[in-house]
Image (cartoon, rainbow, N blue to C red; front, side, top):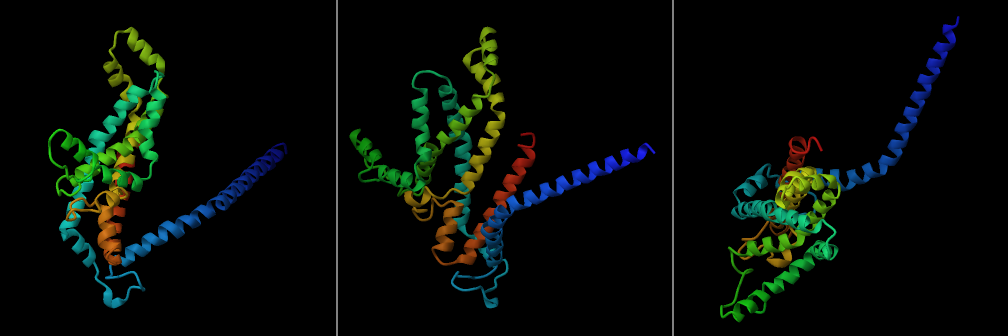
Length: 308
């Protein structure tokens, strides 16, 4: 007889826990529903529509018709398009410059400015300000600076007795101008990421290393870099995805020229898809880029950031 109250008590506890769990699920659904609705309307549906339109010769003015169905025709044109191949090469070049120049420069500046020395805060602000500046404004500023007639480079070159410098009108140098501007604009963002990561490293490690006679370079290599491992992996992730979607600086600087030599994947999508009213072809570019970005993101998260 004494076991019956215990049984009833356990059932009541189980029922109460079940009720709380149900209320928790209902609360989660109520709060998640608006976000899920917006995500479906502005992400899922457009992606599905773009995917279906990429199989048609569609100009975007009216619904695609059966007689405009191309199957994989847009994708075949894309893979054989020499300008697209050049755009892919330029995008890979931007990724390489970001990983090999921009991020190491950001890490070096972070190491110099992470302390409390005089002027460090001011220099942090100076290097971070380009990131705040709008991409289009940055592109227009440097377009005037790189102008072959009145630009700063031309003025300096003529001051030393040389001729005019035409970066933006050269097929080989236009992409170099884009790389310079991209490095100037975005390295401050990564620098601030690294400085924030350095704040979490135990200062006693540096003090112990200094007492043991470690040089500044040894402290940087054996304490700072391992302590920033997670931040560096995150920075690389941001850099690669940002380079794959690189667009805003290209339009005001070169417009993809001269002779389509400085296009990236996204600027190619805009000029050869949207601007020419070849929406189906542009959707094929967008779907391809979407698959690449998702593959990179998932693969990087799976194999590089799995422990972060």
